[in-house]
Image (cartoon, rainbow, N blue to C red; front, side, top):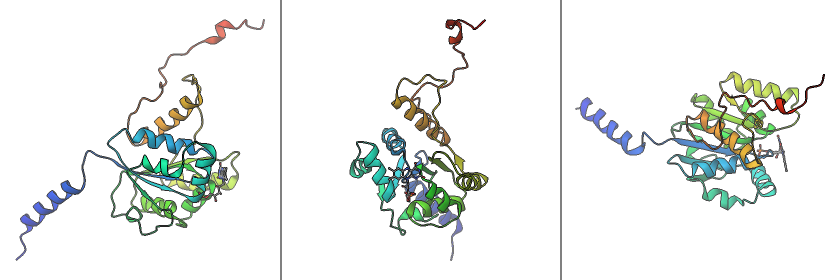
Length: 220
Ligand SMILES: Cc1cc2nc3c(=O)[nH]c(=O)nc-3n(C[C@H](O)[C@H](O)[C@H](O)COP(=O)(O)O)c2cc1C
């Protein structure tokens, strides 16, 4: 005979065992556009939190990482909780039944933008993004290309219409960055904001205008 109350008690305790309800689970996809440092820095910051990270690095992301930064793929993977091979379409993150708080693709190439916008699922980053979309979870894309073609813009618009957050790594100057690190940290902080993870990596806009023009002699 089925005992409904016993059954539901069992399910509740199992859920508590498997999911620490205070712990976020984030998937980080890195693809082959310039700007690997944004992904690496994000992982560095997340490594200092209790957020569970799941990392997938595409073949060309590895190439750009090693070209643009002092990181090797192995060193990068050390920062993540779990890592997956980009060809492993059977990885647990490829299923919607693996619950997460969302995914960020940083940096995101135009090839990956196109693949995700059209649901191609070419490799694990694209497949997982497809899963995030079908499960209507949070997807943040940090696209990098310059300039952007009409096709790039159309693909990004397609994603935006599916509630994907398009967060291009555009530098801000209103907080007076002192270095490239400050600029990178600003973008990383804004990515974390999207997942309600507050990290004060650089100063935020404080509402106070610094009027340097007073130092300049106005043209009469
Ligand atoms: C050094 C380097 C920099 C690149 N930068 C960009 C870029 O900024 N944006 C982009 O869309 N593709 C860029 N690419 C091209 C992508 O790596 C290429 O389209 C690749 O197929 C992307 O595959 P993935 O999205 O599966 O990683 C770059 C390639 C290299 C080698």
